[in-house]
Length: 299
Ligand code: AMP
Ligand code: MG
Image (cartoon, rainbow, N blue to C red; front, side):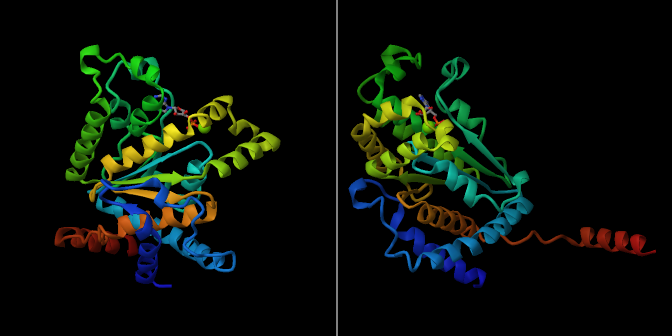
């Protein structure tokens, strides 16, 4: 498969799940179990794309790095056990660690709570030439914090500023922040791994029953499951208000891990390919330098 073919195929995989204008978006229109009609017999074909896509991703990252102008920010959000960690691990397995950094955002520390909610994420933004991966992000501040209002109270915001408009205001600020990043050359690409409640249950039970997976399970995960519907609503509202052409959401069916990984890889390939990065050409002075260095080395 040639590069152009891979990129074309990649587009086919992301198109149904890419949300650029969220206004009328409905979560229930995307089936977590969807595999685009790839039954088990067609699965190797999809996986072949992943196998070819990973080296291509590495090459695209190398060009991004060589250019040192654009940065890429990948944001991953999902319910517990939807496969964020696995998707990040598999999809980025081929990329040069020097050009890539993963940041995980957990319950905020006291120092983090002493700042605005974008603060900790702003410090982890990718430099030019780099890929930054956010495993959770400032979007938690319109998700878990919205589902649990007591967390909002802990954020120490002056009470006069906390009104019923707070979520709308946060969406507006997030859109503005991402537009700002885009205008500075940081391309933002967002993923919501959309898992079903049933599949989450199956994965939780696997984590409980398999000693090697016990570490992945926390009692809090089960407690959060009780708020399933509130979370789904918060996710839907978040996508409606923050999906834009410059920072689209990809709502990726997540009940089949192999399919999730293909779609995520495809979206990253598509995003990087759209930058049309060639290796930088060097000027005449540099060419002279190279010639002189070569002559010296050969002698
Ligand atoms: P995990 O990613 O499974 O290690 O869990 C991290 C936990 O931190 C999740 O339960 C998140 O909901 C929580 N978390 C992340 N960001 C925030 C935030 N801004 N406020 C409260 N909880 C958060
Ligand atoms: Mg967890």
